[in-house]
Amino acid sequence: MKIERVANTVSLKRSLETGTEEQRQQVLAIIDDVKRNGDQALKEYTKRFDGVSLDSLQVSEAEIAQAYEKIDDEIVQVIREAADNIRDYHERQKRESWMTMKEDGTILGQKVTPLDAVGLYVPGGTAAYPSSVLMNVIPAQVAGVKRIVIVSPPNEQGTLPAGVLVAANELGVKEIYKVGGAQAIAALAYGTETIQPVDKIFGPGNIYVALAKREVFGQVAIDMIAGPSEIVVLADETAKANEVAADLLSQAEHDERASSILVTPSMKLALEVAREIERQLEVLPRKEIAKASLEQYGAIYVTDTLEEAIDAVNELAPEHLEIMTAEPMNLIGQIRHAGAIFLGRFSSEPVGDYFAGTNHVLPTNGTARFSSGLSVDEFVKKSSVILYSEQALKENYQKIAALARLEGLEAHARAVEERFKK
Image 1 (cartoon, rainbow, N blue to C red):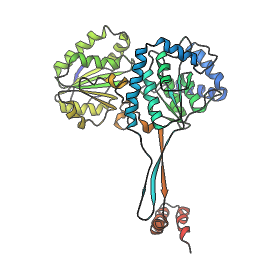
Image 2 (cartoon, rainbow, N blue to C red; image 1 turned 120 degrees about the vertical axis):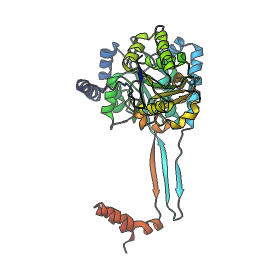
Image 3 (spheres, one colour; image 1 turned 90 degrees about the vertical axis):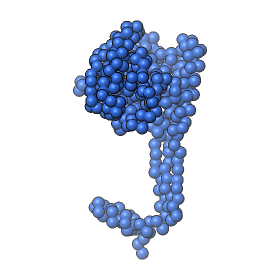
Image 4 (spheres, rainbow, N blue to C red; image 1 turned 180 degrees about the horizontal axis):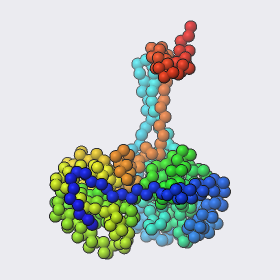
């Protein structure tokens, strides 16, 4: 990896692919086809893009049973333990409806209502992601969402990865469909004969999935337009080079567009980490993916001081931030922008990805400057509640009318005045 000496201004090398106009038009055509032809369109696209002819779009009980035969009992138990940890963490995020009464009898409040139905897109491709099932389904269940739908592209055998099916079944998800790409997003948004529409769509995917989510926004809500995974490690001379290198590689193997960055005031550590990355890279099964990622979007930034390194981290606003310094807890107050913060050498990023209980669906592409990771809040809506008393309106209607007339809205003013006409 290239080592650069910098002050407090750095740039995170990110893949900001937004798609071409040709790709957008392809997505629009697919969405329109699904709206018009429903299941038939889904099956045709599945045959064209995934190379599989399906009789049924929905995963059967037999397929779920076969999935359990492919997964060791020990792994099933690990999935259950991870699910318990994730559920416990998200239970603490639950919001309750509330009301308050003023002395004049006015009641104001907020009603928290879970969404009726949500859809989760689980990507296929180079890896299977049962953890995505856990991280999206569990907060929805904690929020009280009654209907949860999973869509995912089928493999060459016409089914879904065993880990995905086991994770979904362990959580009690009944609607699982073998359809991916832009056509799956269209089905979730508009519905077909088999797949009923949902209210909000979650989950990452390729550029066609991302473009489809953009296009259906408004018909349904979406979680975010997720970019490639990214990690920044903030480390001082006390960090162990082999551990830092391993954590950087943990993100690089995700995707050729993933970004892995080390920020440190120690040139000695920077050189050691660079050597360690080369050594560890040679024995990675996903070596070519990780290597391409590091060459295009990896970097080691060396600052003069730890304070400059912290400033650089805040400018990067990374999805994942590991703090591997002598006293990591002392620095957390200085971190303003990060999707998730991992403190100390035993808080390796995969701990959060899989097992600790925090959510791994996090803001990418610098959006940690203004957004948060996935939480129970994303699966509820909030309605304000107003019961204004006669006394309160009598005291304030003239003020309300004055504000309405200031905006040129006479009917607004008369609406409150009407209550006190003699």
